[in-house]
Image (cartoon, rainbow, N blue to C red; front, top):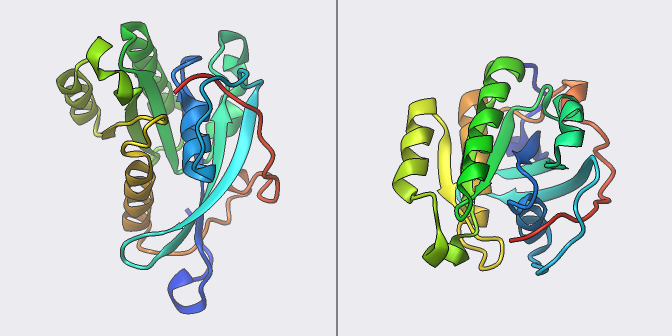
Length: 207
């Protein structure tokens, strides 16, 4: 993967594309909204196709990174569109709802698809969302972590509602991408820079 410049010497942020995948209503849009704007809404309209957001953050080591986030729709009728969003992406977050076993099964399908069709060096984070509903969970932490370890995925349990582990997860992803790429600047791959000036988004559902 080609890179441009060094953000360490001239302040240019390390910029990369990240895609959010998962079944409808697992909380992808809510997680993105929490991370980007620090907000949570109990109900949002479902995402149509995909929504785009950007967010810059400074890591503990002082590195400035800019996420270009594609929040994809989870409905099956949009599934055929998702490859255009994860194509060329160096990072993906595959989400499931810890209270819905079926969403965990769907997350496994997404991981398999990414490993078969996305960039060979894509780094994937598995996120069990809605940690605020821990009392009614149906997917245990151990089950999620075991699968993540088996597939060499980063693993987090998050809550868009309570903001649990949201910033931590994105920081860990950025740190991993920096490690893999040796701390270089943003990518020259045009597929990783889609609509980099567009910050509009549509809503999604749930925590």
